[in-house]
Length: 193
Image (tube, rainbow, N blue to C red):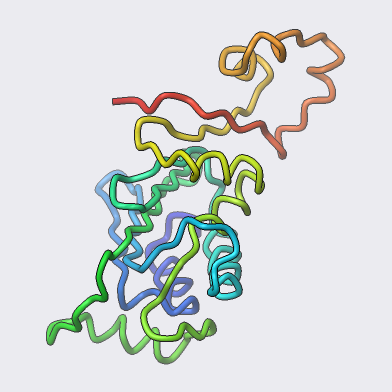
């Protein structure tokens, strides 16, 4: 289900985002989801309730392992384990409805929409990142908004030793036993070219 295009389309329709989104399956089975919306990077925007609902529905389908910012105030969420990439692209203008919109997407949005956006969908990137990495790291990452770095999920203590500063590098055997892979550490690292 995590990289099933039909499941993603259904979830986006429940969020009221399918009309402005695309879902593509690559030849290797990887699914790319692009959500075109008006974005906000500030904590606690006026549309935080809708963003929280959308984040809960969308992020429940996959485990995010990397977060990169795009140059146009968007974000790319990659799940290397679930085989999908979610890109939330900012529209710096209100989209003009075209005659050739995907009628099926519009129909599904109208039929399944559980989130009531006022006007065009407006997504808070902070809400999405807070749900994944916590509020402190989300604030730091968005405050500096640099596409040159990304957030990477660190699953094992050995990986953590490579990424974190010397202060945190002294892991003992007992620390390995207590390491909780279900709540991994996140690190801000240089983005790979």
